[in-house]
Length: 164
Image (cartoon, rainbow, N blue to C red; front, top):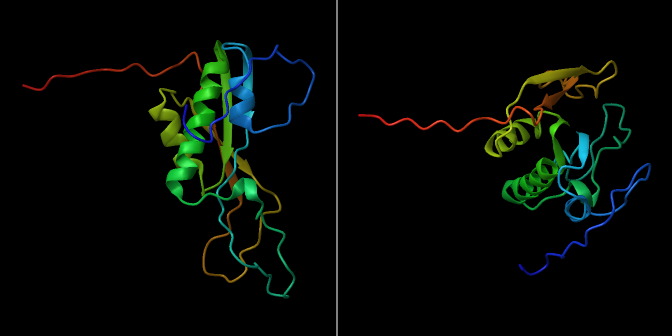
């Protein structure tokens, strides 16, 4: 066992309860094939440093909590691969997973989902009616988030081709 990794202890399938804990550790304790649907709103890896202020000098209450801080993209990808692998294990054969993100992370999430064999059926746009304003006018206002829908029953098939 790698240093720092906790051994999970299997638990009975909890119903009508909120389970608090580190997501990968908690998921490892749940039985395989026991979940019908997962809605995931993972850390966006925003990496905000310092203060973000509006033009009127008021402070933006952005995400700067520890759960959204990763040392680099490799660490973020390892975390993402770990929780998505556990999510895949937990889902029933006809289960489904919905994963939401912003332009900060959705492309990484989609690539890792595909690496793990998920077939992406759809992407859904959540249009924000009151998005974070474009403070300095240097880019477009981001007024949506993307949700990826790869139902488990549609795992991508591996196809090998031999070239002459």
